[in-house]
Image (cartoon, rainbow, N blue to C red; front, top):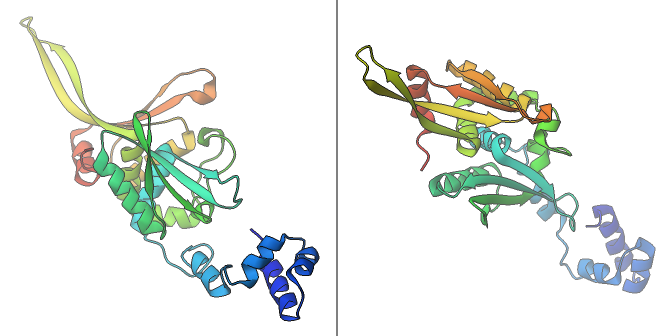
Length: 265
């Protein structure tokens, strides 16, 4: 895409009576591009303003903060951004959910569309569904994006993100659990004094991630909610692939999580 300055120059030359061929040569663009502009198919300034006015980092626009906190958690859990090779500066947000949870997929789509006025669609993948949406402004509100994998670069919230998470901690945790967490029933075998065997079952939540930074964001948010947690590390080689598992198993903590995370379905 050519800059607004180039387009304005071409239109100015056209108003002076220049031919499209000469305009293309003077501006260093193709005649097809010039024809596109002079025939009114190029977006005008008002249209271009509307395309950036929804971004809270590029304009005075506000953002749906609860939806953003959820989307941030989903992105940290199992999401990433890719840049369009044919349209530099245009990014696609990808978030992956298990096929077993169609209502959560719809919930994530709704969150994306509440954050930005874009269309969130789904793409079938093996065993999962990819939720995708395109915008030039994803990197504005997801500044943690960068080259390489998330566990290979720092994952630290910017002050404006931390403020939103502090005000909507439940939404962030919900996004983390929906995308890369689970609620399971732990079954313990217990031998009684008389010799018989009994089984004790209790529910617990797990959130698993390789990024220490994302785990820190998760546990700090749980602390803010007053939810007790434990963590253990599954050692893998190389060391940076170690998997960190946050476990929530106390009865009152699980009940607190159930109140706002809800079942996966």
